[in-house]
Amino acid sequence: MSRVQVKKDMGRAFTMPRGVTITFRTSSLTNAFAAAILPNIEPKTNEVAEVLDILEIDYDNLTCAYCGDKATEWEHLHPIVKGRFPTGYPSSIRNLVPSCGKCNQSKGGKEWRHWIVSTAPLSPRSRGVRDLDKRIARIEAYEKWANCHPIPIREIIGESAYSEYFGKLDHIVNEMQQAQRIANVLKTRISEALSQ
Image (cartoon, rainbow, N blue to C red; front, side, top):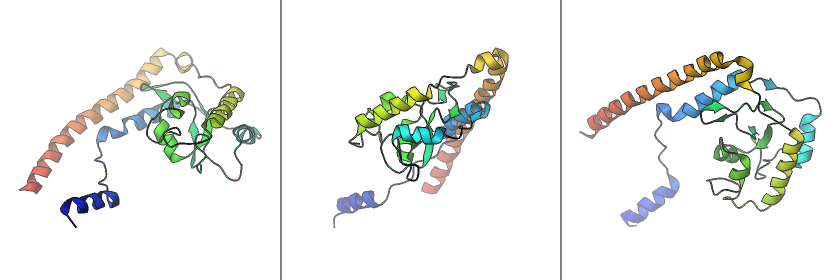
């Protein structure tokens, strides 16, 4: 077997993990800051069943509203963060749909209508989901039923408290960026020492 063929075969069996950076988790931190101040609104007794009926999902066999694969989590239909700031959309049965990990990761903070028909990696359209039009219609029916609107966070807590709170996020992100610059220098030193 040639060296080229061995390398191709290795590529099918082994993929080097992506390098991790300190700033890689900035979006998770931003989501945590938003989620920390948004209340979790518990569903009323019959709301979960209503949502699953609208989405035509079996209560005992949860599947992803977006693609139909096995659901692993409930995902925010409307993102709670956009552009590093909270959208005001709550964590509520009126803003959550069953999702698989692939769809949740692919969608991220994107608007669902654009994402679901996009060619983004792992989107339902890019994965060839066959009944996509029906899924979109069911999600639209759910969205109409939910009648979910953003909470006016700035108005409720006031501009001063809002600025102070999210100023802390900016400070932490800045510290993470500085730490990443130091990490880059240290990583280079370690790599050079190992190559000698």
